[in-house]
Length: 175
Image (cartoon, rainbow, N blue to C red):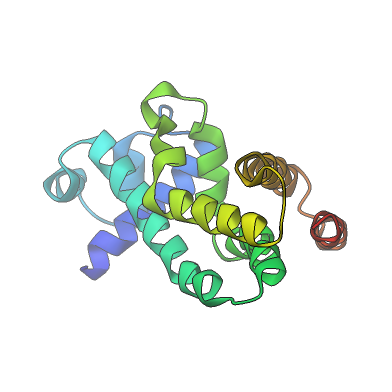
């Protein structure tokens, strides 16, 4: 990826997360990235294409963490790593996750829960719950996903590290 394309994506991510997709004009992205608006359209076609590229970039970053979770042989530790993933990703990619939480209710972006990484995490969690003898592993992973999603909302609203770490420890203690 070229340096300018990466700069456009990072600038778009920041502005979409702070101001929203619909209220951020491509002209502002271009101005803050120091590129022409035409370059944005040349690289991404449309503003929606730019948003798609931002989401794909974030997805690829999630993939880096999957290997460690997949390789974890201790099923309880694997579940803990799944829980911790939200916190780790939020620390690394706050703007991306802020954007995810702002667009998740928009119908055109509801594909987030069908992403390959999300589906793989759900599968790994279900396998671990099954291996640990939980009666309904499918429901356990769904419950855990709801807890982690709520934790994600909390991270956006209350970025106090001590409170977040205490809640993370508490959630992990349930498993």
